[in-house]
Length: 140
Image (cartoon, rainbow, N blue to C red; front, side, top):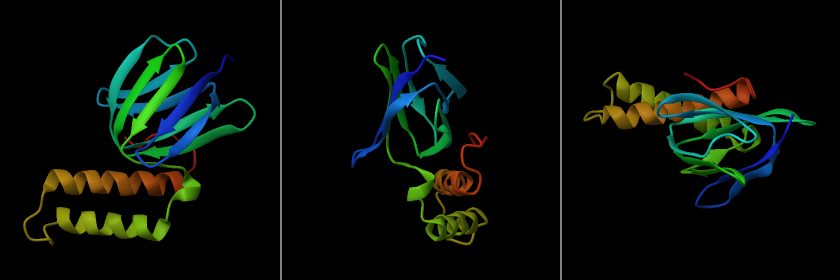
């Protein structure tokens, strides 16, 4: 299968930069698979657990907490607000973040910004998904 270059970059550092054969990611329009020679595309991404397929190394998960993806002739560039591989995730911190968000959504946090609490919950659940079930695909 043909490969292409995938770069996942945050404001702080490059999280991933290597050849891949396929990625499955999630835009505001839904789940999207990208193979080599995909048509040019720019799309906003939602928080999700992206699956990266590599020939020799198999599959890998990368948690992306939003940003943009550009598909072009040079490959795919993801400019993410934040991104992590399963090895970089602090499980205790993600579980605590999930509990805080769930508490806020149940009304235990006073004035609650529901949209913000839902985004925090999605980020925490995606982190935990990546650690518990690496490369199992995006959370819907």
